[in-house]
Amino acid sequence: MTRHLAEFNFGTLRYGWGDPRIAGFENAIAQVNAIATRSDGFVWRMPDDAMEAVQDDPHGPLGHRPNTASTLSVWTGAAPLYDFVTKTLHARIMAGRVDWFVPGDSGFLVCWWVPTGHRPDVAEGMANWEILQAQGDSDAIFGGAALRRLADATL
Image (cartoon, rainbow, N blue to C red; front, side):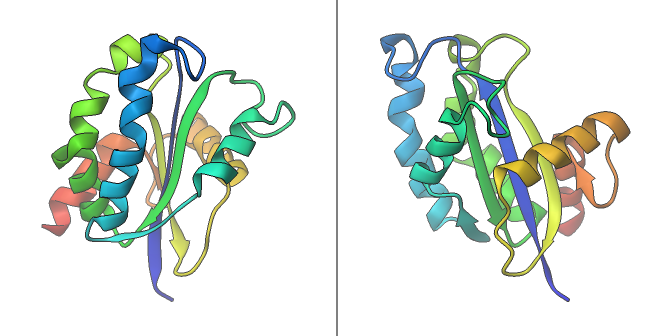
């Protein structure tokens, strides 16, 4: 069985969507997502309308997190995802997260291996996030530091 790498990241915005104080972040989302889509190793990203519906659902997996910004995507492996996160506009935009996100509540990342062709949902991402928080990194579920080590090991 071949596998791909799923990633789910999320954080709580300081202000609601449409607030001019997060315009720099909000205005960059489409461009960052377009870069991801064109990046080597990109497989799939949850469409904006589906992600927005999950973020707005008070009974869904993000219902307890108002003003959430999140992304769920699938990549061929650790190195392509790490390159996108650290070597594109994404890195420059996320350097401004202190202005846009609640302190200590941003940049949460969980990665896990999925069978090729699988399209995870946010509930799966949050479940894996909770496992990561309870048990730490493993070969199956891991965070940013392990992602970097895996990416370095595959170069």
